[in-house]
Image (cartoon, rainbow, N blue to C red; front, side, top):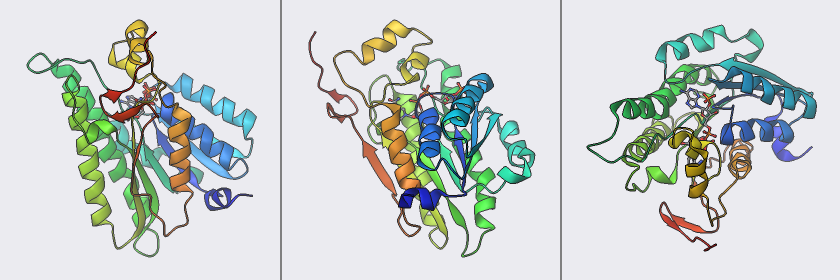
Length: 269
Ligand SMILES: NC(=O)c1ccc[n+]([C@@H]2O[C@H](COP(=O)([O-])OP(=O)(O)OC[C@H]3O[C@@H](n4cnc5c(N)ncnc54)[C@H](OP(=O)(O)O)[C@@H]3O)[C@@H](O)[C@H]2O)c1
């Protein structure tokens, strides 16, 4: 068994936004890395899709117990009931991957739809904070001031704002500030606060941004070679699989053709 598999053995891992893209790949990667003894709590709004991910894991890694749970992180009332409703054997969460997130549109002020502003903040910021606050008491109840991993999926957009992304960038900058403050607040514990900031990854992200317009979404990836969600999932599992005293506090991951949020080398057709 690899040292990462050994360190993950017996752990309970909770992934938000596990129905698609990075979250789905993260669930599969954890299962692939520790197929014998692991529990996965997979959450998102699309429960049918979560069940498909669970079925795939059951086929590929029968030693992994999977619990799909319908959870909309933008609804505080759903999060407040969440931990209490977990079955006993899934209650001792060891790793929280705060991945659920979205971008809506490319509008610029003053033309940004207020509903889009609300959904981006409610999901990317308030949702992530509420999930963290729901799970932290579990971590803090453990010896040594507490133990567990919070892995927040930020973005290059949180480090570098760009035109047409003002709200999304602001949400990811908020994630970055919250994450950095949390790491400082929990410095006396064994709780690891980890941020992983992807550059361009091809997922359903752009389809959601353009309201389901696949042709527009495809244009984003024309002439470039984006990261795959598996590329980010590998980093998430790597971070969770470090020796307890090692914190992969912060990382920025680009595909080869990307050097900044809007600096991408495009091959002409
Ligand atoms: N793709 C990129 O280029 C990129 C770059 C940097 C960072 N990121 C970040 O990576 C994370 C994952 O995005 P992705 O690229 O994998 O996109 P994706 O394929 O669209 O996946 C987004 C996931 O978030 C879930 N989600 C959205 N709103 C939710 C809500 N209110 N409650 C619960 N789950 C919700 C979706 O599930 P349901 O629809 O089933 O709820 C889905 O599983 C996001 O935080 C995103 O900001 C992406």
